[in-house]
Image (cartoon, rainbow, N blue to C red; front, side):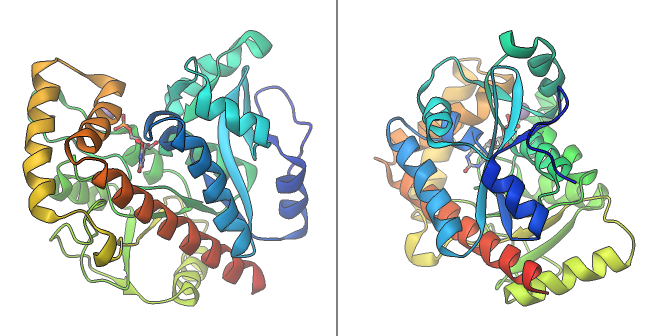
Length: 313
Ligand code: PSU
Ligand code: MN
């Protein structure tokens, strides 16, 4: 049974999330790295609030995940959301960073959680559906630097449904899809036979399975449960509407420039993804940001519809 006054190191549930989980109401987990490190201030705070509002409008309870003062939280109050969006000391925490961030207790770290840390904490708290923008994956320079997001391996070992607009197009998309296949992670396209391209409606890569409604997604979830507790994530790949996508020619040109800038400045590790997202935003005059937000909004709304449908069964 979920607790909202947990043991040290266990996630603290907001009262609202605790009540929803205890009574079987739909809950959607939201990650916070996109807020703290993926979007410019101060717009990031209004986006964080807007995303929670979209979950509520669809009839579910939002559970934004973050670490504050050495405690993991699933479900944030508005003051906590403000801190995640505005405090420059908020770090970027992947799954592997959770233990050191929590170990010092109240003098421990505060950080936004990536897909890997969010999926882990949400699943642990009993939240079954999670929405983000684009997953991390295999970077284009992988042959030189072996940069592959920890998102992939964590999702391979966590039974949660993740709604995303594919993987970020700054990545090597075919290599990422190949890794997901190797890791045994189930991928379904939502209303499309192609894997979405994050800022773009399609990455050009095919997907093997297509679903068309929240009901069909829930059928897949039921089948996974019937086959045994799912040991890996279900990725629901939901494309941004064509009307909202970034112009593909602009995308390709600007991405090449951003990758060059990343190489020239020697950016590596956790800094790569935020740097590239920021470069794309600057070099497209903000158009990539609008496409990113359109994708995230669509994912959050779909995740809430899936959670509501699952809870009604
Ligand atoms: N989706 C977005 N914007 C983001 C991210 C996802 O639209 O900023 C974040 C997620 O938190 C994801 C992280 O887990 O980027 C991947 O970072 P890395 O490549 O360093 O693992
Ligand atoms: Mn990385």
